[in-house]
Length: 135
Image 1 (cartoon, rainbow, N blue to C red):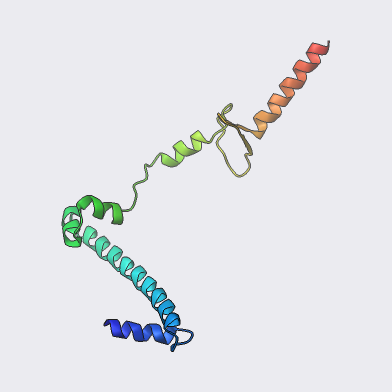
Image 2: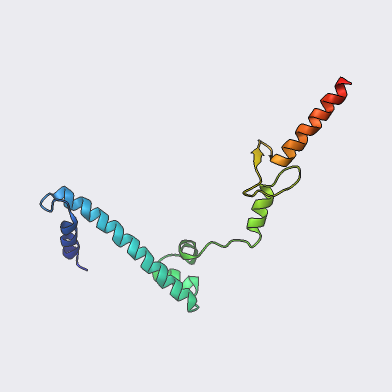
């Protein structure tokens, strides 16, 4: 599409086509839309190329960037299969290792976390110790 055609499209979208600043604002929005569409087009083309077995080196060469830059821009991030499990384990109760969940309430501290059940148990232990110390 020719730039003059794009300018005409921006003018048609402007609130007041005779005002150059309104046209400029509409042109900026149109430019952002075109950039998003261009990025989506490249994403699809790279996906098709990869599905056809094209190497990252060849894709990078065609785009005028290194294979690392092409891969970083277009490859989906790899998630380790155990990453979610590791994250849940790291967020578990520091005492009983119960993983977090919708029904497991945690109290977070500087060095760890404790679930509501362990808080209740600790409260009972402290109450028993106080009762024994009074006797």
